[in-house]
Length: 99
Image (cartoon, rainbow, N blue to C red; front, side, top):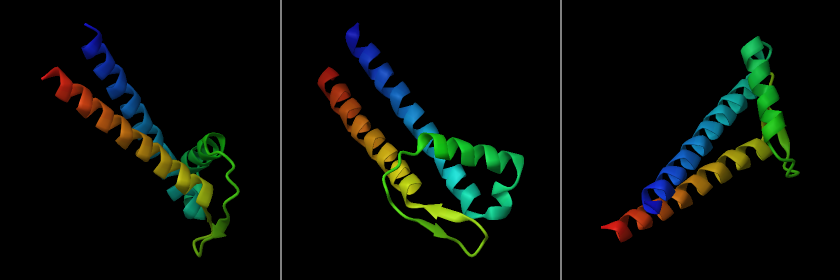
């Protein structure tokens, strides 16, 4: 009975990581375009982005669209998706042992 539970927990964690990465990507797009960031939704996404992104010390570049591109945020999204990928390999190995 523990095996299906482990697989379910891995799947839920993977789904949460992808959802967080999607929200952060939307925040990156909102901050990239200054006009989007000035809206209520864009400002909310930018606030979430600032709250979740760790300060890695990477630069923030100004964009020609009146916004900014954060290297810290981009690396955070890549890291989250990398962790999700590793978890998917673990889940696949777990399923292979069951067969």
